[in-house]
Image (cartoon, rainbow, N blue to C red; front, side):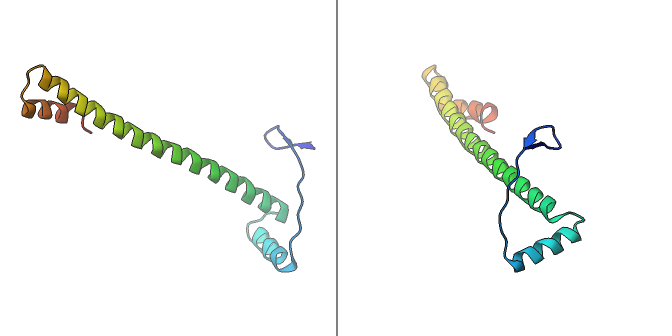
Length: 102
């Protein structure tokens, strides 16, 4: 094991490619001014980072949906409380619309 660019330890990994895939890898690496190993490392790291970004995005979207549901529930409850306290339903609906709805 050796120390990587960020100071963390890195471990070697190996796998086999058929001749056609290896030739494509060499050409792509040369086109980008990289060694085949550096290109593969870059591809793997980018793939893993993209997968993590997707998980974070999925979680953010779920939170956004949950917040919308909570906001709707708050608007409904607030309107009900205002009506129960004597406000007309139209007045309560307008108050909720101007203050709680996005």
